[in-house]
Length: 257
Ligand SMILES: [Zn+2]
Image (cartoon, rainbow, N blue to C red):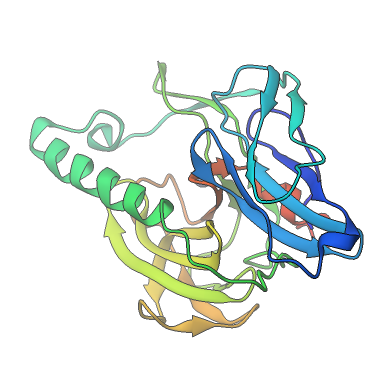
């Protein structure tokens, strides 16, 4: 299980039903209209709710159908993420020219469609490994300023891999899509089931195909610096209920140095 972190960009782990409900079908849980991942543990059914970075601190509630919903309400605390200033020489990658905007918008919609997938998978693999054997170089949630201009906060975790290093599936799943994107470069999406999707960006080579089942630790490709990258690194994102959450919460046991 990931760490329970009830902050913007975190994951709220809610005990929805007690152990005596484990023989019944899983409760169906939604947050702000989007279905969320529900897994069994020895002491009941648990919902893993991805909390958007833009979520305001305060009181929230999940919608539960079927079961009673033991823990429906939860409180999101504030979290101040640090700021990161970057200088990118290729100005085209910071402020894309008008001719690229159509491509960027098309890709944004394609990625949004992938994030919205909800594949019924009772045995979601939550026992993640780090997607590369490399130190962490940039954390999730950093408020980024490129060439003095504020940009979206960092939606993933960066690992400082040299170009040509192996990139591994963090857990078992199915390759949802692969592509070459303006910002993220060569990218692999792995669907672990129930809206849990991992994304591996800036690759130099992709070794898997959409629809292929992958095992935890299977090589997806090699690292690189395709797309908007200041140097070779792996950008890794974790999506839950269409929301990018802090990947470090999933690496409690095997977090990179
Ligand atoms: Zn990144």
